[in-house]
Image (cartoon, rainbow, N blue to C red; front, side, top):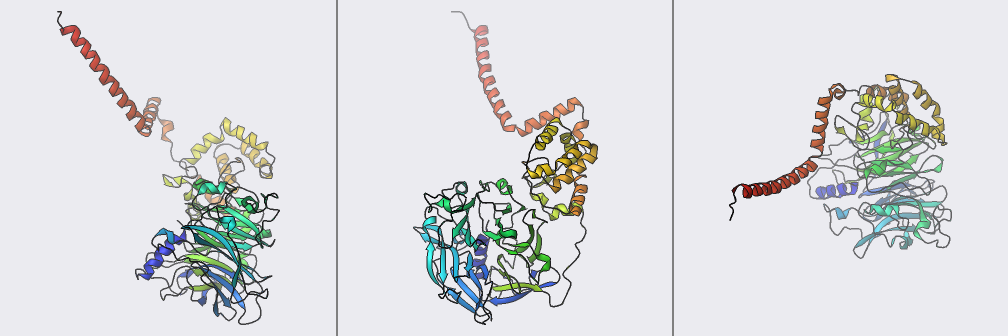
Length: 579
């Protein structure tokens, strides 16, 4: 469930004095060598922070803008004064306030066009009792970003046939290096529309800054340039709320799923296959989070003098777990390592609830804000900065066992052991024994032969690996296969749904050791034939109980009716008197 459901419920509790909210910076944990400081206060449900990249050298010049869920945009100046840039953008007060779920909608995204002084915002609005998405544009005049803006343009017609829904609405936006506006649109709780190009739901849109469709969009229709397909850049999404440019100006989306979230690298025209099921959230994911942690916003930290350790990282805020993950991203490899948690809320969620939504990179820190009010009624914009104590930032990672890595990498979200864990991937019970059968089967040899015929780079690259696998025997072969599957899940199976997590050599070594212990005694192999047959019958009867009950009921009816007929006939033959 999306963060806004929880957030508004918690806001209700706060207003009724039923819960204690966290205060200040003490409940936010950051890595050693860093600390959290308050930058500005006085916010109400902040959802986006956007910095001016080249601010004027004036204490009253805009430094960053903040959008608030209930329809207000504010601006913070160099001297940390706070001004209202635009207010009462729409009537975004819910008709049925929390804890009713219909309250989780509002103003979401914010992006700046500094060349001409425009501020773009994404929101929903009411029409005929329904919610619809739209994009707005504001300016302050003089082609400069200012302290007060006026709406001078909005895009409504494009979204007029596709109602939005609470949470699954229009998301954040950014202006790319190509000077195009990118906007993520939720599926409106109608997952089938994500697959249909005639609807805006479940899409990533690419728009010229004047509202027209770029002719180089993948589905652009020159005969109908104002059509919905002309604006679509990629499709098949559930809730592409967090999006950002990354290395080489490539586009990334951190997407909310029901129980599994994913990070994808966007390819123009690609279908990302959301079909209403969690399994579809594993498709094309270069990073997956399971259980879901609710990606809210994302920003790319290309390079920064204060954060050399986190360069080339995507920073993703998580609503459900109130944390920020750092993802080391490479344009070719994708994620080069598992996510690293760089900010974590440590308050007691039972009594001091908090969620994390906006994130932005400023000149003096990584900026963020808790979504919910503090104990004093305030909500602060805070920032991660190097510690004033001068503590070293490079702390050695403790050496972990394979079982510890299994837990830390959340492998149990997809795989189960002894019935504990997820069902998205295969169970790992008796893994070694099962691999012994599979890797030495004729079907697997045929599979390797088929993969050898593929010409894509990923399969050609691993041809020597597959050949070496053929030469090995016994547990050495099984151990080698596990290592290669952890390095590249598709090395021998093109349809593998397991993402490449780009694990380190240490992680692969320790995980392989752990996997090799999953070889519990297979007692079934040792049983005599009669006992095996009895076990099979017991399994079949217990797993097909409804079928057997139906069969027995039918037999009972047949026997009952037939038996009665036979007894009646015999009775007449034996005891009936001749007239």
